[in-house]
Image (cartoon, rainbow, N blue to C red; front, side, top):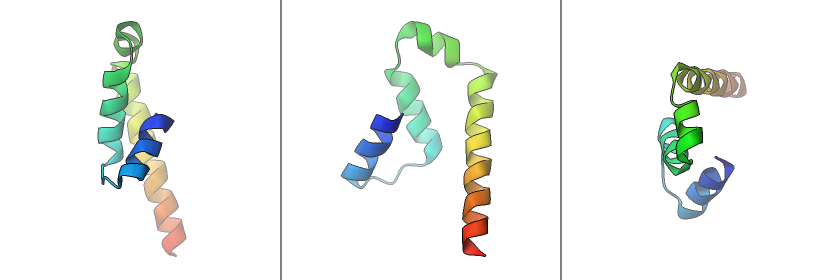
Length: 61
């Protein structure tokens, strides 16, 4: 996932975090993709988005 974030920042492409996660999952091998494509992954993404919103909220105050 870090590779995709670094590539995204070098290319100056504006992608939401959810799209970065989709690209990362598509690049995984079949076994890992099958293992991660379940509600746990969606929950992790939701948690990261909430943490990011909280961080932005506190930095703006």
